[in-house]
Image (cartoon, rainbow, N blue to C red):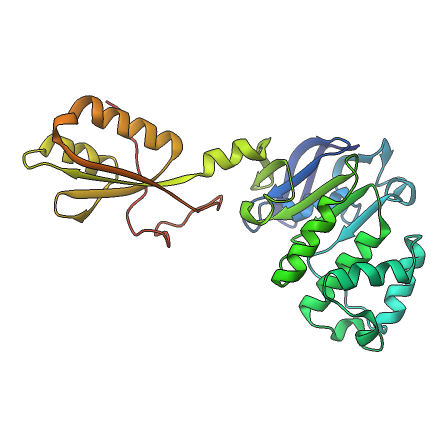
Length: 307
C-alpha cells in the first residue's frame, strides 16, 4: 500500500533521514517511535509529500512527489502542529469537508464524539482556538474523511482523557483493510492502536518489529536479593552486575527480561547457599530510552557480568 524506497533528507548539516526503506501493507497499523530528532516526523511528512526527499515514496503504486493529487486522494492526516489558519472555524471546516468529499455534518458527529461542539466555536478564528480544541477539530476532520489511509503525528498529545478514549474507539472501528501510521515518542501512547512498531534513531530504522515483541524487550523488572552472612562472593557478583544496596545485606537493580533471567540463573547456579531471599516484580516502564534514575526505583540499571 505504502512503499518508502531509500529516502534521505538533510536540513542544512542535519541528516534527518538516511537511506530509509520500508513498506506498509493494507490493513497494517504501524507506529513510528523514537526520541526527539530521530526522524519519525520527517519520515511521516515525506510520506505525505510535504518535504522533498531523495528516494521515492508511493501510495497504492502512485508516486507521491510526481502525482500527489492522485497518490494522496485516499489519505488523511492529523498533524502535531496545527496550521495558523486565520479564517473562522466554520470556514475551515467547510473548506476541508469539501476537499475531502465529506460533509460538515459528518465532521460535527466526529467532533461531538471527541467532546467538541462545532457550533460553539464556529465564529472563532481557527488560530485562536486552544491547543486541545484544535487537536480535536483536526482529528474530527481526518476521521470524517473516512479515507483508506490515516497518518497521524502525536494524535493524542493534546487530548483530554475523554477525547483520547473516543479517538481510540474511532480508530478501532476503522475497517480491517484500512491503514494507520502514526508517530509517537512513547510506546505506551500507541500500544492500544498499532500492531507493528518502527523505531528510528538518528534518521535510520533501528528496528522494525511486531508490537508484542517490542513490549517484551521493554519490560522492566525490579530484582531484589538478600544475602546470608558470609556471602561475599555473591555480593561481589551483584555489585559487579550493577546492583546497589537497598538494606542490610540486600541489593537491588532494574533489568530487562533477558537480563533478569541471566543474572538470576547465574546467582542460583553459583551462589544458591548465599541467598536468603530473592524477589522480582515488574515495573511499568515503556520508554525506549530510560533515564539513569527511574521514577520507579533509584537503583542502578543492571549490567550483566560474563562468567
